[in-house]
Image (cartoon, rainbow, N blue to C red; front, side):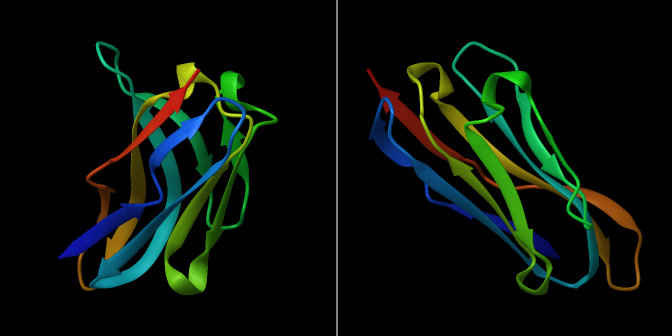
Length: 120
């Protein structure tokens, strides 16, 4: 089994910062791309940022210059540093990872989600 566990969400005022973490654990041989997605009430889940194992990053336009995705391959952990937060960033944030399970194949895993609320 593989689990992704997120932490770091919460309530913050507009202009503030939060740092999300997502740690993968279980029978893991390797982890490929990792990313963060978010889903606001009444909206579809959207990509926020992704990072390859080698550190190549990609961001949705609305967070460029404000959010930074990073990872620690030794800890199987991905981070999302969120600065200059806006009320429209309010959503449940989900971690995603492509994982090669030991003795198995590449599979896509999701975390349980962490709530980020930005007050105006």
